[in-house]
Image 1 (tube, helix red, strand yellow):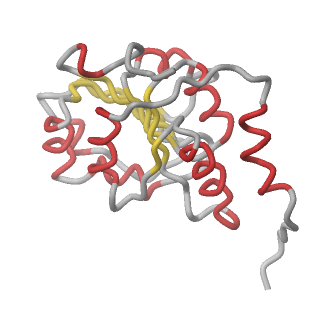
Image 2: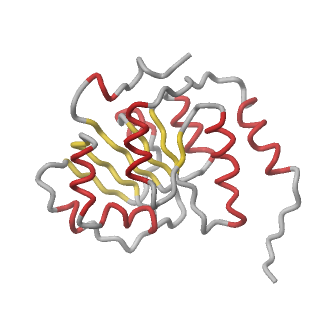
Amino acid sequence: MQLRSIHNPSDHCAMHLFVTVGTTSFDALLEVFDRNDAIEMLNCLQIDQITLQTGHTRCKFSHLRLADSLAVTIFDYADEIGSYISSADIVLSHGGAGTILDVLSRHVRLCVVPNPALHQNHQLELVSALEKEGYLLHSTIDSLWSVLEEVLHHDFHRYESDRGQTFAVAFRGLVSRPVSFFHT
């Protein structure tokens, strides 16, 4: 089953993008939205509303705060982000498993940027497995704008709760290998 009928951006012109970095610091992702070209790129994608959940960040978002063409909401943490996810046409997320599952369960288009600064880049492995299944697209910081454009037209598979089987398969490769928490 495809996602087309649920939160399909082509059904209306203006869109809402929700960006979430979870509880970790991911300034590399947030800084994309604190650049001169961010407003122009968001306008090209027909995004007229952006909500950023920033965690702990040094970003000031001075360019976004001055944008006349965008409704901008910025907050650091919330007890629950489900309402933000549900109100979005597209979610741009870090690679946290909990956030990914929440977005997929709500059938919202999802682009994930794994945080390469995290230990052994475990987010990339999970995200790659879920992308291979057709549930999401993933991006790097450098390819973000082109992948976001692709998200608008991509036919995603609709995630149906399978009592964790999809995630179990994705995690299998992560938990079956030894993990070192000490760097030498």
